[in-house]
Structure formats: structure tokens, C-alpha cells
Amino acid sequence: MQQTDVKAVHLDASGVGYAGRTRVKGYQVAPGGTAGEIQFFDNATTNAGTNALTLHVTTNTAVIATLIPGEGVLFQNGFYVVLPTSSSITVFYG
Image (cartoon, rainbow, N blue to C red):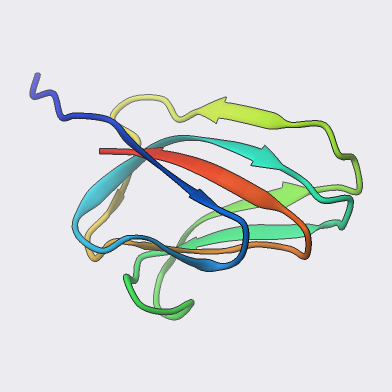
């Protein structure tokens, strides 16, 4: 099994998480009290193209942490994250 270094990026607003082929391996979300969806697009520049992962958040403000099983979710082109108002996320990738 091939191993890669795991890196992290923190976003307080929608934006590019990583520009390049990678796998998302987990995340920690701090919902801001606004219900909505967190969307991960297989795109390094904008929220267009393939939506590879969608997470639903409620008005709860408790931190949510999840490890993605296996090798994680593959993003061929990098990933762009769309966040609901007042939410933040730390994404683990590699």
C-alpha cells in the first residue's frame, strides 16, 4: 500500500482547498448555526463541475469530525469547498 503525507487546510469561507490531484481523507466542521450543505467540487478554481461529496449541516453548532474510510475520496483536479454562512472547515487530504 502506498502512503502519502497527510496535509490540512482550514477554510472560513468557500474557496479552493487544494489545487492538484489528491484524496480527501477527513474533515472537521464547525457549523455556524446556519443549516445547509457543504459541497466539495472536483475543481481547483470554482464551484463547478463534479460535486464529489456533499455534507448536510443543521443549525447545531457542535463540531463534527469524520474520517473517510479506505483511501478517501479522489479529486482528480483538486477540490473547491462551498460552505454555508458562518461555517468553517478543516480538511485533511493527501
